[in-house]
Image (tube, rainbow, N blue to C red; front, side):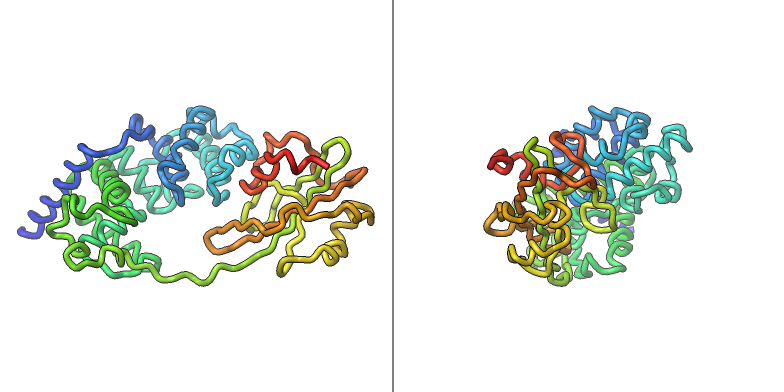
Length: 356
């Protein structure tokens, strides 16, 4: 009885804080399943400040799930451009089509059924079910890991297999019979703007008197996260083969790899920073220039570094002036309809690359 009373006091304090401090986020104004689903998919691996403009653009272009279900894959990928983890975008479209066709545009209200949809795991299913349908199932994201681990002194590494279930169990216990939508959003909001990963204002925290991490001076050590393996280094050499009319070639990445389904320049991947003589000997250069390599030149003197979750991409752009482009690939001047990696978007926006 005493334990339940303490938990109730804690949760009441948290929800009171939420109602007084919550941000005015667009998906909260109309917490329909479509809006919550869209926001949660966008915000995976993305901050609210970065993700909100994407959410607003998606809602403007596709105000309903029926509108999204009619979109073409390239259109969705282009709108998603810059968010990374592009399989989320393709899954977004597949799920929109499936729900429109099989559920008449209405998301199921059971977590089990939601988890059967493409791109929806327990976290997203719990978010949709709790916020839109009031289903009592806690959500566990980085903010929730941080709040629970610090307050209760939980030293389980959050990137281990059993961490999610352990933290979800604790969050479920804290929810009690309170409104699931308010509780889950309060947990995430508190972690996002109060119990932040860096430089949290613990002195003004409503929980500091009983917070394990604050009392034991280990706020910066929680949550625990095992170190990942060293980033794998890859070397991309993009060949910008430009004809006199300003046309060049792009191809779609189709292998299960980074930037899948996005478009890019002809690529030579090497084991290290390749020298021009070795690049000239690559068969791709022969296809592009019919053996005329005299104009081949490096555009960026130092590789552009693109750090992804498990990879470090070293990117070098090479320019090749040609009189005639080969038949393969897509010859383009206007890129606005083609989704490309951000590093390529920046390259194409730099007009100097098209000169000379």
